[in-house]
Length: 85
Image (cartoon, rainbow, N blue to C red; front, side):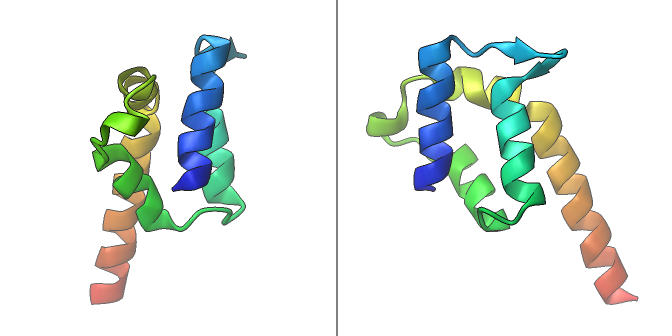
């Protein structure tokens, strides 16, 4: 969670830029997931966190990562279906 909040803060300070048609915050979240640098559940905890101390830049970060979170939820559903079979 600390790393995700750090990414949020960093991107907020940069003004939430894009790089090659992708938001930096989304790219960083994707990399954190791809390289197993953050537990999967931490992403959902971060998204649901409403603490005042993490409010700065949170809404913009959530909006800019919505596509990635949609992908993550689909990925989790596919894994769950495979486990049931």
